[in-house]
Length: 423
Ligand code: PMP
Image (tube, rainbow, N blue to C red):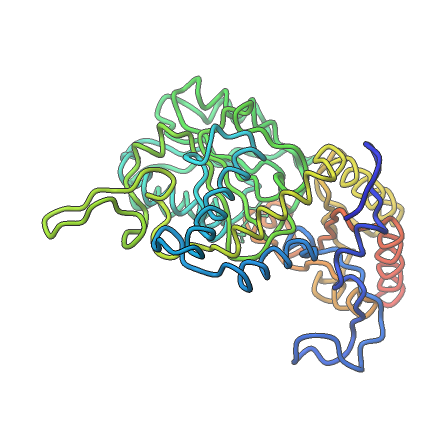
């Protein structure tokens, strides 16, 4: 593991923990993994889609499979007890990481998307009434936007979208106007996965609470990249995914205030989430198990614990500083081209979405791929936001702890090649 002083990352040492960063690309993509046609170094700038996994995380999961693989909460035998302790402790570790009160407030889901659906299907279907409204924003990811839209349609409620201004920041006056005494939920993304905008989530939650509405903050891009304190934020619900923060796929987190989660009905039912089943009736397990039906993501929870250990060893303030430095550098360098349009404010999280005049994002990304530069092209699951930007798609470069300015130079050089090609 990398050691570093309080302010800068030892990126070279960090990169040694991520074997994939050494691979080359460019050959046959119909079979996974490197092949003889791969001769271009990889510059991985697609971290907002998913981050890479350090050895420490893979090794923690391997250790589970090799040494104490067993189902949890079921057996009295040694392996099952060891697996259960590790699985339960993973909840404690997440709680500590985001400053939740305890494991009762940490529900493991498949991902951020499932966390939103969990709240929609439990709170939404039982509490949201016709005539009420949910206030969300124009910059939401589909995971939240579509969930609230569909819920409101089912319940006869209204969904309201807070506007963004020309800088790509939330219009807080519009938010204040749209939240009223019929608002049941205010839901906003913490860091926009398209614009990079960092939203004032404390203020958003305060406004929700002034109207006795709940708040649900989408932390999918925030938890991996900056310190997050759900207690200080006072959010009622908060969600994020393991795979964007050095962890494995298949695990996400729904944070919820204990008294709210206690009051909700279960989402999925079946094994593991029950206390007592009779033919006539069933009672539920205590939190958080009430929301974790069936065999849970055990290896993934162990991997997520290792990912948190890794990030905490670096320090989340340091991660945030590195992200900001790279995003600012990328913004400034891409801004040198007068035919490149960048979306979102100058103060941003660690990503930059942009378009090259007259060139579709898919064509640009394919040229970048020829240069080994991996970025995301498309609508980034924010189609309504792209409608507002009046483009069908954009190209997004997103950065993480192992990225360097030299990699951003490669991106800029590849964009320049595309400019000349399409000129
Ligand atoms: N919200 C935001 C802001 C995201 O960036 C993403 C992932 N792109 C999601 C939600 C959904 O995450 P997942 O696909 O892991 O459910």
